[in-house]
Length: 246
Image (cartoon, rainbow, N blue to C red; front, top):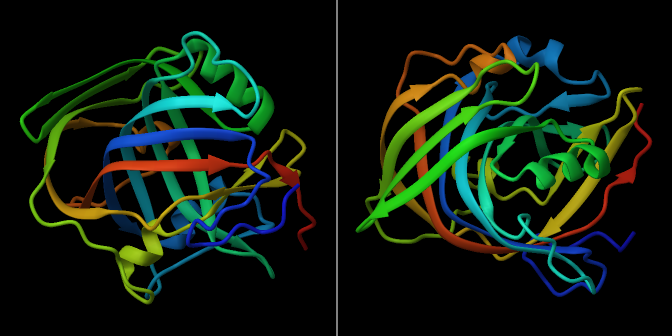
């Protein structure tokens, strides 16, 4: 495993996978931390901002996916993906992302991510189309024996690109450079990523159907989400490594 990557995306030769995220919507809702506690391993603390946890529903398009020094794998280089996430931190560790679910339109990508990265990926029928600056997104989970999760809506940026500042909610939500995962034995793993600071834009969205969090037994508040858009971001990722947690 390479040394800890820079949070500003500085060069590091240890990456094993490269990918590009585009047409991405961050839709975030505040929730009480105790509502999420049963869904996350006890070894991971739920990270909060002003006393509240946040749940994100994040649709986007994945492209340019490849392992380092390996040829592209057919049907896994580009596909739609939609994740449901919150934010956690092990004692003495660094802030990261915890995924409740990750839906993808590539069968091979779902199978591989489940096996290699211990992540709750699900197969879904998905579609992304664009009209001018507006993105239309549809996702219907059809993974065998999995709870149904659906998303249908359209969204677009409505302001200039900005980079969030440390200490703000936008920075806390988005500038995270690792994920945490657990296997069936509740062994905790950390996977690091590097990328440039998020090129965020304020966004608006019309979400007609969204049962993605509900599929993970999470109730979102009946309030408008906090919305941000990102057009494009290149990412480098490391393999998971097992970490000691107390």
